[in-house]
Length: 550
Image (cartoon, rainbow, N blue to C red; front, top):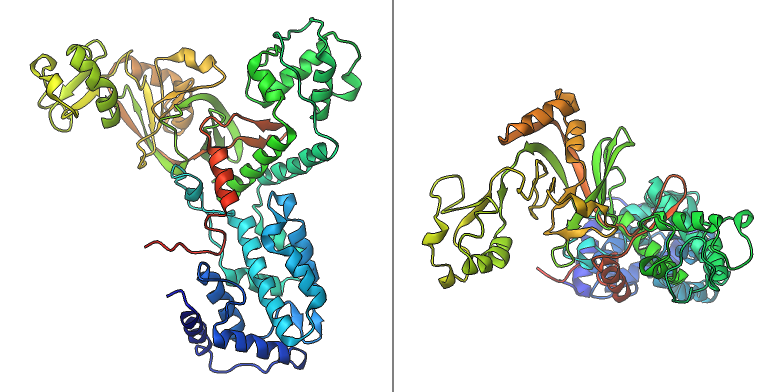
């Protein structure tokens, strides 16, 4: 079903849906005739067997009630709209895209060389194909989220080819129409502005690399201080009026280093040890790439996340609660280890559980607890983890000393940890049912929140100050913090349904810009930047293509 005959059949099926076709304007007749010939013959003038969706829908556009009337050209040559769209393609880099993906060199040449009706018809179809690709890329992203990683369980918006080229024809200005296709959010716009700023830094020569050496602390004298000043001046962490000469690490420089550390998710202590030095020495090209990748992620996201929602950034290891469009609560998170990564998805929080049990996931039961039980059948007793036959509903509790653990290769029982101080979920969990079985919850391991890099969980998100979060989310149900503390003190599990289910958006952003204009970067703890860059470089499932799978 991906051959020329099928393309012609689909296109003409649409043509016959219209009983009357308008007459072709005299100045379009010759190009229109060539377009008809191309479509009648199913000629691969704008695509190949890997992008039939785009070919068919473009052919439908021309073969419908417009009777093959061209959009970008006329018999006498290209319209001004054709040159306008070429200028838009050439500026694709401002959006973090590669202008070369839209065949601008070929289009530019054809704009100059196309004289015959056939040449103009081919230019017409080339422009339509390129505009569909470009429009989809800036609207929904160059690739499907799942192409970059199977852990991206989000679905990017769809925009049809006919919507794009119909919009282009109706638009008085192609540039203005393109602006309506980009994400309309401030987060996207600020990141796009940051791309321009960092490209200017690159054009001005970038920033210097600071040599390795002993830890650099405020008050120290070091030959590297001058280089450090230059580095921080380039990104505005150090203002020109604050800069001084000499090799002393002074107070102004310390303030600038702390600002830099805050923007990169590091402890703002002003001390330049290994991690801070590594972040300082990421070249500007690396930061530009990071911004471009996160523009792609922003295009995947819904434009409207809701009036009230929970926003999690796994790369930042932080969550926020937004109410009426304003952030009203933020907290640090502990997220999944590099081998048990927290996925990207959106779901709806429906209830909160105080003093929760922990039903041990099969993966942990098999990989972690079964080997320990083979060495010590009583290991789980001290962890307050009970063993049950069946689904662990309290019936059929199993005596661990009555099991021949050494004979087992898989855990045949359900494991459940009782409420209490050792419970892995702590005193509260926030449930938004999802196929990954991950959620927000408390933890007895409070010390982990003090670390810069907090990737220690099995995939769930452990949240700092969880009872404060519970009080906020349950405030409309008269659950004060005092009332919550009293319920927790009983030691009994209690499920509280939310009267207003709350969207939860779990994201992975390694670059963003705050409202105050500060450009933030985070380490790519899961290697997802690398995965995404690889997928984009390979051009997997480009906009307009359809999968060949079943």
